[in-house]
Length: 314
View 1 (cartoon, rainbow, N blue to C red):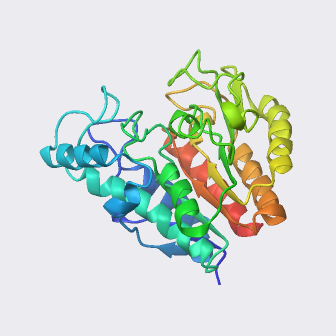
View 2: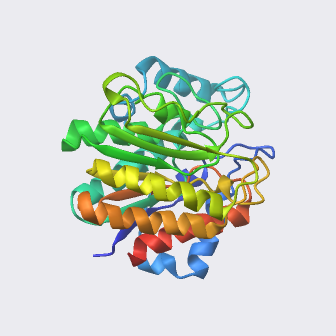
């Protein structure tokens, strides 16, 4: 048995926006070329993309929104939101494959076929239940969380997000849910989209204290991150999640054109190693990784492959 299911393929590569958009369709190949150079493609189980059904999408997404995306995709022009997320022909099918491949990876883990999965084209953490936002059409992470509950009876899920942008689509969907433990490090929302993620937000109602937002000042590097990560890791361990999800956006690495943090790719690998160790302690080893953002192609190749390598080695 290979330890990691890795989802890459043509339909996932199609999830990218044309005409020079930062989230272009070349991102998967940038990752994949580096994975092959490191021989990681031989060590992981490379899996074909799978489309989510409408019923699977609707575990998280409002049915009316799913119909809107399908109809708008067929029309092939305009925007899914207010201007960040352009429509392109086949967008519905591509987005359905992002969510469906995540569910396929989840199934392989829960069936015991693999210990972990990695979805480089995934982690669309800005999408709401009823709206697209910030390059994200369907929130595949929300679909995974709802499926963990509906099909597998897993309640206590840890969601860790080290993308440079606050994962607002996940955070606010589960802000009042005490069983979704969230740690989100990001560039301070006062200086970057989506403008959310204040450190005072720690959950609502019975979920108070189950969320940890960690905004970092522009220019923060590895030392500043490490100081906060020690606290974050202790926060997660104290809550003993049954399943762990990592959104490892590479746009927090120094040199991203859309942001101003200055982490190295080693941070992504270290976070992955630490979360794998935590998964072994309390989650039967179960962890999924999602690529998320990242608009410097070399950075995403290094950051994501660092995570994949850690998943394979630990």
